[in-house]
Length: 477
Length: 67
Image (cartoon, rainbow over all chains, first blue to last red; front, side, top):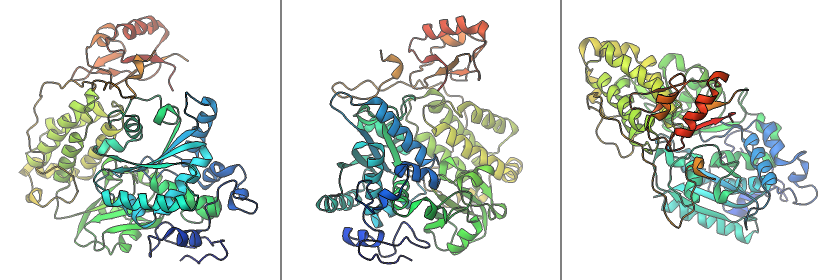
């Protein structure tokens, strides 16, 4: 529960929720009353900014905050890299300062937490953008949303206007919308889009922290990460670490599938999966497996998954991930192979088509998975699937092929017994069940038989005249 | 530390010259795209690696000290 602030000095929330107030969204004045004023470094004597030795970046490092967008990269280290690159780069042409991009695109189909956070706690995210911008020396900020969220964009634009009057927009924050699919929210794709290029990942280096939007060092941070930064700036690293254990702090997790109360839960990290499922009302029908981390994550068999702590390191140790905080419970009534084959088809459809191994490998994987799920898999099909997994992993400009390979490999481990049953007696009746996993834009399951289709040639998009955009770095003089 | 070979997968169009010129370190996948052996390039192969890099028509093959 949150204690109301007195005379502009707020007490930190003692428990959960930290991020999303039950009575949100709060108007700016109420938000500032509850959480305290935005602690800019120069907010005057006695301000929270003065209490941070080494500034906000050091405080975020001490807090041990990791990115909540999926990759789990240490947030403080990323901020430091941008701040240092900004100092090294100095002014370039007319541009000065670095850039902050808040990533609220949330392209993971089974995740809903960023949208909820932006709807119910917009000022916490905007505080985070302003504070991170000050810490890394940014002169402009962007808030990237997925296109089609007009209502959310208007809601956030109103919140930004509200802050204008309070003098809180020290750097201009512009809302941008991204219309692409799964890979368009990857950080190099966001930067490419802001530079007028295609909404597609680019080859690294240069990474955004080196050379991003407007050619400036750019901090791309998930919106939940920024909201945590806004709280760490106010209440400190020690307060942040009061929650969680090996992995620090709290996180938003979207729980869906066969649970009685699907929804978005803020939890202390390292809480066992079983405890979180109990919070979500427990299974609504007999469960068989859990997908942790979304479509770059992995399947875990049901009873074994319950004791695993919900945190990225703990989930990685057993072959899954936390991703952007996604848990889906798969009921016994569904076929794990059919679900995986369908998502393999979805992920293949999300390839930007830039890299040959992804453009060719993901459809081949999807059709092979289709044969394993909907045909009668033999050893050859399984062998080809396993070979394809090693052929695509690590061979794209972005992590789509790696993530897809890890997700599919986990299905072969977790549904091994199912695979043998399909092999001996053909597809089970459960393949016809209504799909559990969401796959926007995909209607029919992948049923095409595997065939060695002639290779597709990845052709880079022709440069658009009159627009600046990162092209192939190798051709730069 | 010896340099490493890397391919820019966006620029690569599977012309296949690198797999012809440096089969010791580069093989083709089923679609003709190069698979680079992991690890640094041994001394004896550095001249050949340089030649493969220079021959790539899309400048997708890179020789670097790594990131």
